[in-house]
Image 1 (cartoon, one colour):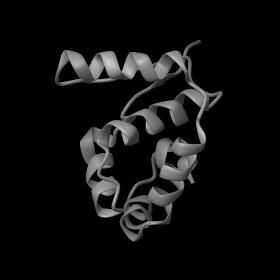
Image 2 (cartoon, one colour):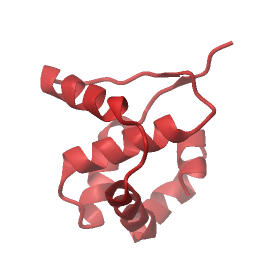
Image 3 (cartoon, rainbow, N blue to C red):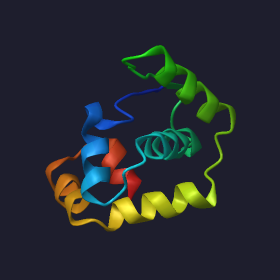
Image 4 (tube, one colour):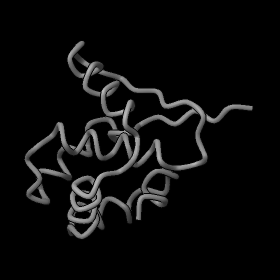
Length: 101
């Protein structure tokens, strides 16, 4: 049996949450989110939707080094500490957000 993970970027909502938390580097946020998902032992396949080929290339590059870096961890800590993320988490009950904290 395989487990597919999707909605890594919460249908783009992750980037709005990042902006609200003062995280303007969308590429860094995407890498951190993807690496966080890859670091979880529950999934076998990650499904990503991308708008442009360069997004796919950037995601593949992040997946080549799936370990979370200190910068990734700091970025995710900042995101998790934001009021907007807390509000979103309270509204959502999916696996990604409940496991993200």
